[in-house]
Image (cartoon, rainbow, N blue to C red; front, side):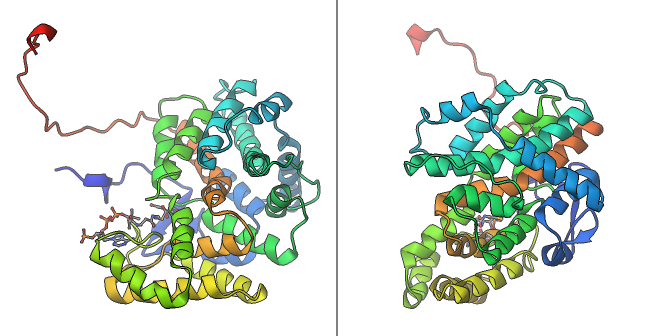
Length: 369
Ligand SMILES: CC(=O)SCCNC(=O)CCNC(=O)[C@H](O)C(C)(C)COP(=O)(O)OP(=O)(O)OC[C@H]1O[C@@H](n2cnc3c(N)ncnc32)[C@H](O)[C@@H]1OP(=O)(O)O
Ligand SMILES: O=C([O-])CC(=O)C(=O)O
């Protein structure tokens, strides 16, 4: 029996995050609790180490994140010669792969070296994404500002201005909500890669490639494109009806594991409402609410994490093709925590396929074909 899409298959054990009866936990902490109280730096430490940091451990992590953020100067120079008109996820995937060439520890698969690389990658991903966004707009990259939180620093490097407290807090919460999610497709890709005992840059490169797809992390960008295409509240119904008639999927809805709703969506919905009100531009929030009500009432399918994150990032002034890279900036902590776990108790991941192709073929010389 083939489990198409591996639905319901338990492929491995993990102590990192769990989804049971619609409740998501990181290391045993309910996502609602973490979203309301924890910072992204604390959550990163939690995912990697299995416990919340003490004050001094958190301080040390913050210092490491600041110290590791600088990209190799040569690589930063090279970025300027790379094509900047492609998708930012292609740039990010290539940039992470290129980083492996500049790291003396790339081939060191000891736990401590891989832990250091996890922190380094977490520090460097936002720098890469912000540098890309600025270079393609014809601006010079902005170096990270010591003393800012991880979330505030990304917005600072992107826009060249220290963000408001409201924006930095909202972004921090979005990062917390996206940090890990059990055996989602990109994390599975990272673990399959790690299970060959290759290096952690390879694991993350695989994961970025998997996250980019519109059925996974790429959906947040598609949601914003949909909102922009609809563009006004009174067009939502007609737009949706046409989608339903054409049997097209509505981006940001549905989930392989959650059938009664994604616990992260309510936080993002509330953030979208608050940001919309604060900015005096509730249109994107109101359209999202209407889409949500109609998809739920007509199809019984609920919004996932990608749905309200789109309007949240849009309210924060971020361009829609940077949404999925932002997902990666957060999920890098989950990917690397899973890679560390995989290396610590490894077995090659190699399932079987049920062969349904031709049989008994005989080679025919090319002249006779
Ligand atoms: C961070 C994340 O990765 S969250 C997910 C982000 N992806 C999206 O938002 C893309 C839109 N959603 C989807 O494509 C799917 O719901 C997925 C990929 C998330 C889950 O896929 P699966 O578990 O394989 O469910 P599947 O695609 O088989 O859907 C089951 C049924 O619900 C329908 N359905 C699922 N999602 C949607 C949707 N967004 N819009 C309309 N119908 C949908 C399917 O058409 C299918 O109907 P059928 O049984 O009549 O054929
Ligand atoms: O778990 C999944 O299939 C997708 C998801 O929601 C995530 O990666 O956050």
